[in-house]
Image (cartoon, rainbow, N blue to C red; front, side, top):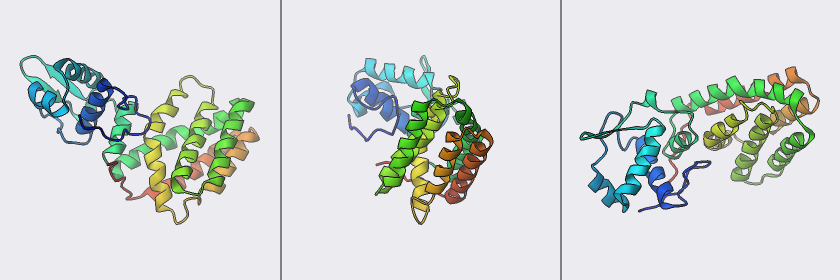
Length: 244
């Protein structure tokens, strides 16, 4: 089966045959190769295309059905479910969406999600962080300062926002770090590319860190909200190209 570069943070990253089948079919569904409401090609055709057994194909379809993407039906076939029935916060679905090309509407929705979660998370991190968690945020900020290439900046920026979420020490919030991380890498790359200087947001990140360090929850909330507001401005009409 033809292998493609796996999207960042995906659970099914193609390390084994099962993962490759799940990843390939997931990308096809989320990318619109198989439209919502359409039936997948029959088993024989898919097995031939992917060079896998019926058992491997059926196991992959079970995984994608659990994510809300597919609906297998006896004697009818496997149908692609409507988008509104997908588990859109599933890390793999988010990653596939970014890998196959995210449009401006998707970017807007993701930015709105961040604006709802991250300012309050920064405020909570300011009052709840442990010394080692503050050190993680500081290391990410230092990596942003030292970044000499946009790819280094994006990885450090992702680490910064992930560390802030983890510093909340809220067990219900911490999994959101993985969920947001699935798509955040692509989103950050767009905002960095759109900026004249990919380090333009560094002072804003520094202010967020200082507020968290000072345990100033109100300032942390406002600093993070301001940072994300600037990101929204940079991302207007931006579109992520597919990962080939």
